[in-house]
Amino acid sequence: MGYYSHGRNLTMKKLVVLILALAMTVTLMSGFAMPVQAAAYNGIPVATGSGIDVLPTPGGPFFNIMDYGADPSANGVVNQTAINQAIASASAAGGGTVLVPAGDFKTYTIRMQSNVTLWLSDPTTVLRAARVSYDGGYYDAPEPFLWVGLQDQGHSDYARNPVNALVAQGIIGGKPGNLFDPKGTATRAEVAALMHRYMAAAQ
Image (cartoon, rainbow, N blue to C red; front, side, top):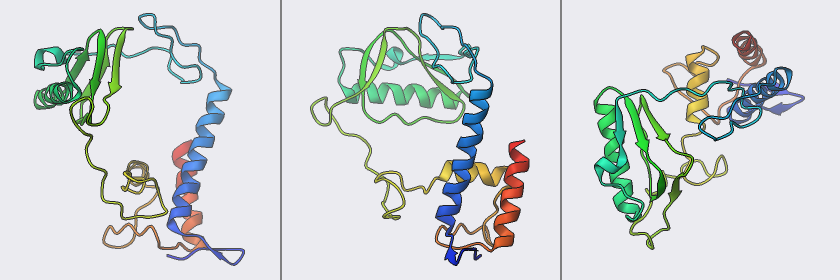
């Protein structure tokens, strides 16, 4: 795939960044066009401009992290283990809500799973980052850093979620054999077709 603009080569990296920038622009414009005044939930105001007018009601089954050993007085390792066990239980049940009650809970890495909601159930609930070593443990190690210069350390999926979303909507499809080539290029015709598909999906 090769694309040339004023004699310069446009890489897939720049192309993905361009698409994401367009998506953000459309989102921001629609947000300014239709401002939403959201009501507070349980005393907690909803962020202005979020586009949310009704917060979802958490649905069961519920998995209280304190039932798995979490406690405001516990160290980060104990709370991390309890929270991840509650998440695993909710996932094994086919989905559910992991309830974090009132209190200040320090924790290390939380590993979310599909169909699981993490609910801070009280205005006084605090889920905070534990201090490395001091609070009893460490965070998960960063992912292998394969794309130097393309993104920050520890985030080496190369915009995996946005790319997957574009694929799911039929906007991009990769090279033959389902190959994603971030250093590849695209022709003018391919970019024009891609932009047409994007604008159609955005309507």
